[in-house]
Length: 427
Image (cartoon, rainbow, N blue to C red; front, side):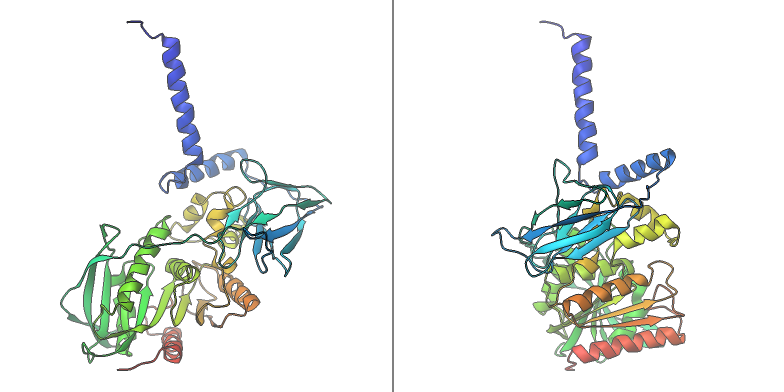
């Protein structure tokens, strides 16, 4: 048997290493890419991660069409710089768009429209566009239809026996609680609980509030109990922090399906509102983008434009706690991986057929800048969606707080007034 030479072995090993490096560079594995992007950021920081300024600019223009070559009105088109600065516009009735004042450089534009998928477009392997000073660059884009998303039903649904709980803050409340168990994609569901008023019966027809909290659901019981005491069935869940939000959103859709199937005794499966705050407001926005039909939605301190948050991080005007800066860094450079920022920037994905929204934000928010809500409101205005917005000067990031201060009580009252306006309470 012929012996393989060391030269051949080294060649094979080298080829394997090259293939492994290519895979690590290009993979969308949610475990690998955050690490890859963080390492990349550190390397660029050592080399001096600077962004050149320019006194001149260029223009990007083109036409947005669908697969039938028909123009798309109202599509968003955006280009981002490394520091998160963006240049964006919307297409007109003929599908044309034009973005001016773009500093010279290489960009990876992104685009989307209601009913269509978000895409990165350009030329070459990485879909790049070169913007030159005082020149007009043309780049047309075709948007494919939004992919059909079919969520497999949850299995083995059951509720535990009810127990009675009491909270003394922000004010004294009592309600019953059942824990929710089911199989979600062949895995046990994340911890979720069902709260109802003490006076509720199995024949009650209470409107349902799906409360998606930024943390374990049972740590928010003193936020859930006042809402249940006010006459609502409250389904509380808290998706774990993850870069793979879509799996968690699938699970939330399974919960919504259970609600509509009237699996929760004492609730009305046709009267549904959803609430999210901070990180979990990303889930609410994605549920709306997926076309979930609910009666109303509330967003408390929502991140809506991740490009803007990264820009504020880079220019030093925003120093987030809890390692949020590391999460933004793990998303990658906005100019290199714009779709990661774009897909979860709800300000670019609003639709006129959204349910009524209530947006609440503190101007003292230390975690999510209050300007995020202003950006969302501006986009909602552009599409003519129904919403109301409330700002608070003294409240913290966690608007449904434990302390019974004036802002907390006001926030609860605004929440209850909004729910009463859009949900029918048939006790």
